[in-house]
Image (cartoon, rainbow, N blue to C red; front, side, top):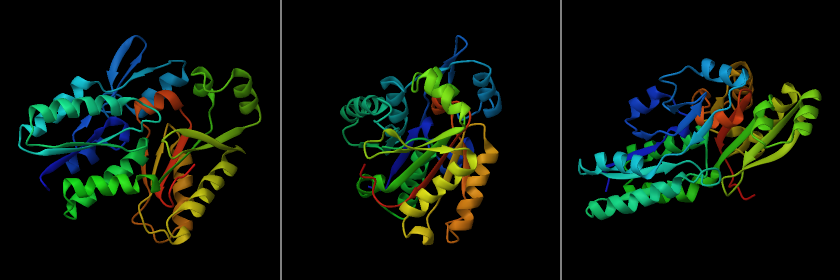
Length: 295
């Protein structure tokens, strides 16, 4: 069954031009800021600069996940055209949106029993989720059926590495993820925490670095350790950032120097409004294929 559409959520943090070019329908998360609700529309209605400036000025956005009705609407448009759906969701380790997607799947398969809806919990986020989406599109282009593609994604999704660092702890303190005391000390000592996503799709702190230079070296070192074939890695590499493009470019430059066989240049995206609501400005994330995440 090759007549299927690949869909995702806005939190894959790929550009609107990417989604249009590849014909990917996406369900939008939402966020509330200053008493108004907005869609996570891949920066169609707000620029990344304006969004992160509001957070820097003290705004505290609150996010809401895709609901069952939204998923049903998106799936039904495709099923009515006689096609099936392969849907990739944000990690269940940080969101419950996969549950809504599975409820919608059951409802739609009951209404359209001749079609299929397969839901994949990516155990990923941001442009790491987007890198898995890219692979799903490549698999379909290579001729994989719906079932073959879904099987490949399930068997390989934990080989997709997600590493993050932050140079601004303000939003972590506001959101209660670290204490005010820890945040104050961290900022005073110029601490940049390095995190990654574990095998359950949760963000886990791994180490603390002193300053941008050290954390940039450390995040690329992790890629050297874990990438498929180490520095001979020949796959794609994506980076996403929240209002710190220069830091992202420094990571990309170092990656391109260390990994001469990359599949194209490092792709740099913006962290979207939903994930960015939690990280705030100052986060850089690095994504690549490697050994299986086991911890």
